[in-house]
Structure formats: structure tokens, C-alpha cells
Image (cartoon, rainbow, N blue to C red; front, side):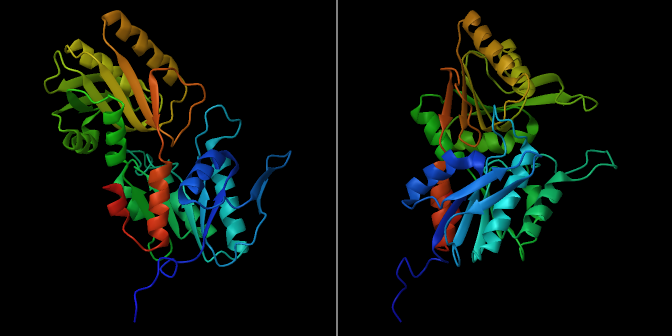
Length: 339
């Protein structure tokens, strides 16, 4: 028997659907895959309810539903957009798609995989997994989840979690943009593995920062200590999630106190909530006063409107497109990550 042609090796014809807040991401991925974005509409009623309407025949298709839960400047909450994702998945299931995959670069609840000594709180990561499974999602494609423990929240007989690493292409982007430094550091000991991966890729030594938190308050960092040699060196700080930037601000100032010079903060998911931009802007101003530089780099997991000139964005769309193509043709996602 002859080998199957590429078309014959596909699971089913590709179909890309976008929730209302992920149109730019989905359209860009569709262009990289050289297929049209399937027409659909996200409708919101005056009372706050919503629904998703698909305006094309997707029966039997391998369907990928895109959502970006964090949208700076949007009136919709992260929970509004999570429910909107479930509506779109439900619509695809009722439209008789053969397979439905949720494409969510930043997965809500991924930091809430344990109860942290509070016995009367839920585990949001598990709740998110159960909701997606119940809606009929058979695979979730996400990028750099906060903790690998979330794999255990998904029942692979119902829904497979495909967590994609952005280390290789993001490190390549930083190198091309001239943002590699003398030392790679993590914001805390828990991020050492990520820092080590970037350091290995970039051929740089590693440093670590140990932070002391006040868990009685939200996003409160009391003190940060530096482990490693950073004096008179530029430092690249890598992290998966930057939310209020409290850890970043503490880390940067601790590095400067130890004699570090130019600093680049690179985060896969720059949520930048609340006082984040104010804190980061203060760091940029302080860097200029010190006669050094401060830059920020993120990905299109979260798109920030009108960013300052010291912020650079890496587009995840080519990576996500390659992952979707590999999944659709039963190829290797790991090979895509390493290419």
C-alpha cells in the first residue's frame, strides 16, 4: 500500500473559529495556515448573556476555537470571555464538528492549581478543565502553563492538554532584537527551570532571585534576594506570567542594588493588571536616571494597545499555526517547539 498523501493524513478538514475578542489572533493564524477563518458571530444581549452563531457548514471538520481571555481595555471580564469560549465550543459541537480543540494561549486559572494551606477554597485549574471537558472540548492548546501539575486535571480519555513551549522561538526573537544579556535570571526559585532553559539556549550563565511573599495580601512581595554574580552585567529576567509586576519591580531593584546594569524583562503572558504599567514605567524612568536601560518583551498571548517604545512583542501566531498543522496531521508538536 502506498503512503498516504498529506491530505489523506489529516484528521479532517481544518476549521478555525474565533470568539469575539480573539479575532486578530485567529485571523493571523489562519493566514499562516493559508485557510480562511470560518465566519461566525459572538452576540451579547442587554442582560449580559451571550451566544455564538456559526455562519458556515462545519460538519465533520477538525475545529479549532480561539479565545484570548485577557484583553486590556475590554469591558468584558476574564470570566465573560471564558463563558464565551464555552458558547463557541457548544455551537461547534451542535454544528457536528468531528473534533473541537480550544486554542487558549493564556489558560485562565493556571496559577490556581493548589489551595496554599487554605482548606476552604477550590482548585480553579481543575474547575476549568471540567468545564471544557463538559462542553465537549477534546483538546486544549495552550502556551507555557504556570505549572505542569495542571496536566493531572485533565482526563486524557476525554480531553488532552497540549501545553506548548515558546522557549526556542521566543529566545530567538530576543536574540534577533538584541535583547540578550550577560546573565539570565528568574524572578524566584520556582522559575529556575525556565531561566535555565533560556540560559542554555542563549549560552549565558544563570542567576536566581528568591522572593518572600505576604500571603495575607494579594500580590504582595516583601523582599527579594539575589543568588549569583550580576555586578556590572546586563540581566535578562524571564518569567511565564507577569500580572501586577510587583515581583518584577522588586527583582529589578534588587539586581540594581547588586550592581547590575541594563535589564530586560521577558514574559510569555504579560497580563499587566492594576498598577503594573505604572510600576514598569517607574522602572524605565529609574533606569534612565541610573544611566542604564530597561526593556520589556512579551508575546501576543496578551496584546496591549499603544505600548511604549521600550516594549517589544513576539507574535505567537506562526508557532500556534505549526502546532495546529501538526495536530491535524498527527505530527509531532515537540518537533515544532524545537524548530
